[in-house]
Structure formats: C-alpha cells, structure tokens
Image (cartoon, rainbow, N blue to C red; front, side, top):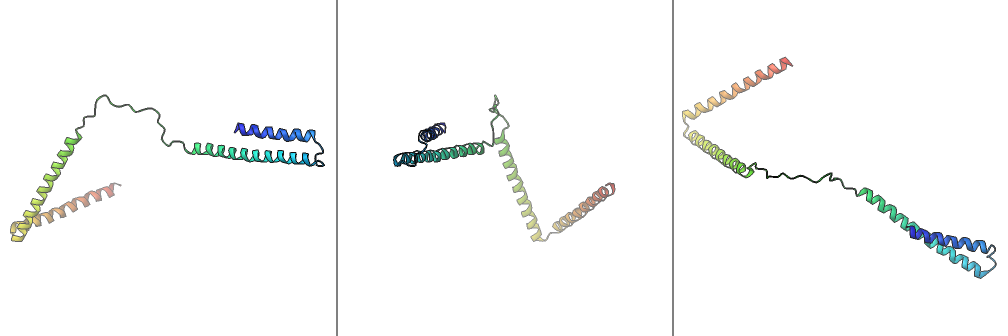
Length: 152
C-alpha cells in the first residue's frame, strides 16, 4: 500500500511540476497531450490505490471477525498416573445385573400368567393384596400432602 501511495504521489508531483512549468499549455497541442497523459496516469494510480486500500480494510475486518472463540490460556496438565476407576468392570457388572433383573421379571410375569390361567385362588388373593396395598399407599401419600399444605 505504501508503494502504490508513493507512485501516486510521484505522479501527482509530475502533474504539479508540469503545471508550474507550463502555465498556458492549452495553446500547444503537444503540451495539452502531455497534460492529458499525466492526468490519466494519476487517475489509474488513484484507482489502484483505492483498490489496494479497500483490500487492506477488508483484510483487517476479516481478521477481527476470525478471532478464535476458544482461547487456550495454558496447556492441560495430564495426571502422573492413569485414572483407575475400573469403568469396564463396573459397566460389565451393571450389564450383568440388568440381565439378571430382566430374567427375574420375565420369570415372575410368566409364573403369574400361568397361575392366572389356572384360575388359582392364590393368584386372586395376591391380586387383592396388591390392590389393597395400592389403596394404602395412596392414603399415606394424601396424608403427607395434607400435612405439607397445612404447614405451608
């Protein structure tokens, strides 16, 4: 940009010197042609300078826009020893416990279904006990809700 500005200033100085040395150049076709040539050179250099200046401003703006969103303040410090949480063992134990629980649930449901098909009195007693337990659980829940409303 400084180089183009220097060329533009030199061309403008040439026009200025021409005008100082040739005050009345309109009468001479050679001098008039020389003046026009110098003016065209200044106009071309002005266009070049304007283009370079615009590119410089766009580069500055894009540099400001392209600032990283995450700035690394300092590099991470890794532990001296690996973290021994035994995640693989814990995961496998959880998987085993889940499979065991699923097997027990399926076996219980199958047992209840078989008993229900036999229309056993024991199953009916068990279902009545389950319904009674649910009613009791609802009563206990309503008592706790009532006490919370009363104290609030």
